[in-house]
Length: 281
Image (tube, rainbow, N blue to C red; front, top):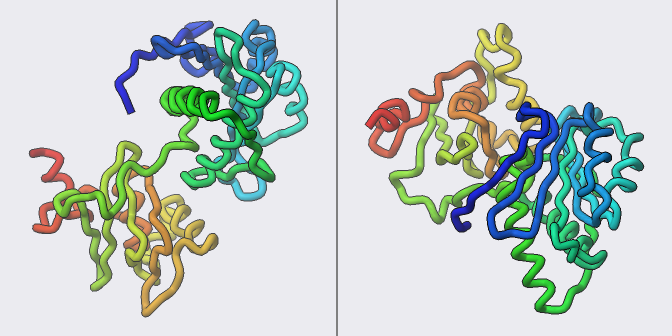
């Protein structure tokens, strides 16, 4: 991903309220707003254009972060139809300032984004099926460039559903791999810009610590991972069935240890040097 200059305009001066975002030398433009300012986003001239939009919030049934990806020839009209959905509390949409996005273009981008969100596996994707459209080769390449720019802007606007894990175990050098051990069990992982990834095959204790009952929030993510099958019982331990990204080394260590843990001391490199010491050097 190349370096880029991003211009963000805060319509009311508040970074959480209505704002626009544009990359230098790009025809695309993003508009983002909380649901509480829905009338203001509909009043924007950009909302009358064709584009791709994102509704983000919490799915009531699972209490997990969720996203809906959509496309429309008139964003304003389509967004009005989503007022009956109660899960979302933020909206972001992208248009082209040169008004050069056709129905086929936005359907292609929508389909690619739905697939990307499912692959990233960070949030619940509420689209029932992928969209997409066939494009001539030249148009497809243009839309891939447009899509790449969108993916640069989205995390800045608070939409991280498409952020892929930065590296894989095969790409990591031994010095990047960290271990978290307890009672003869070992978990491995590596740091990312968003926290830490615990790798598939890592182990966690079966029994929670007695003190864990005093801090239920510490184990909330562990319990969710057990419920959805990410942690399964195997040979006297829980085993991770896939890579999982945690928001911090401590939240990962708490899942592995079965109770509150200091991630800066629980995670060590191959020489036994704790993460706290590694970050101080």
